Length: 364
Image (cartoon, rainbow, N blue to C red; front, side, top):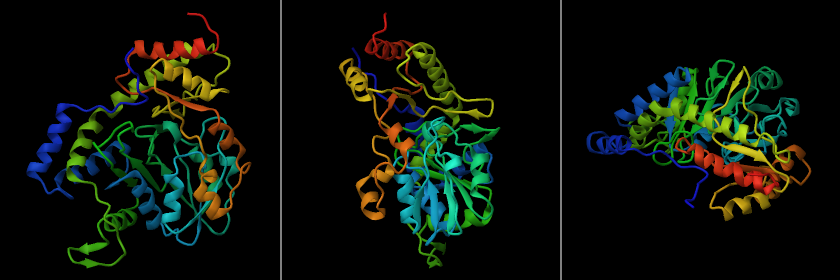
């Protein structure tokens, strides 16, 4: 049987030619395609500004730095890729974790406790499912910034607004496995704050105000022109790809609804339109199910097996211990990501589902 991967990026001749044309005809750094991509992405998200950078991690770091979090605390979730919390550390702040919600994998607003030293709350729209932004805004309170980690949520909607347009800033990744990519690493920061946007443009380009004048300690964190050209083509297809992901998720949910042993992911509400960057089930014997999948040439992954607070570097640096965030730890022991990408066929979905059904003793 052919192998079914967890994800597969879409690459077309048009995308490759767009990169080649940019290399032939534009500046390789901060060429015309970069600025067009930023304009188009801002228009897509419904924000006034979009600032491209070299990765989603850099998007988080620079957004936090531009909001002056150094020496303060940033509240985020331990149920995410480690880059979310690493960005807080690199920006000179202290990460403070709040537990996840059993309802949607995201930061639980009821667990958020701000203090006078809290500079920002950093929720993650995990797996492409938007966090409860209104409740988080209320929990954050006045004077605390709300920064969206939308690295897995390109095109997701919350109460009629696109991810990245709800908080003070939104941060996106264009890594190869995301709902859209730039043919390599890349990221974007969205905001309606002109001052913030201007500061971010300086930070990503060595802190310069002109070619040889620099007034802040900046970084070399620009998006390559060729990658921007690739991303412009991908962006035009994002909505159709997201709709296909939702269709795949609905088929999974329909086929697996009678498997009592597993918990399906939330499918959205009238207020929330997810984009299913990942289709994540919960299984009591996750590792055994994954082994059965592997035997049938179906790839699965665990996002994420070790919560951030239990990573060795965080235990050593901050003294976190097991039992600190029980819901995140419970989820980490049960989650399993099934294959999902726009070109996944209905026959392949059914094949994946049948292995799950058979694993739990179902009938063909």
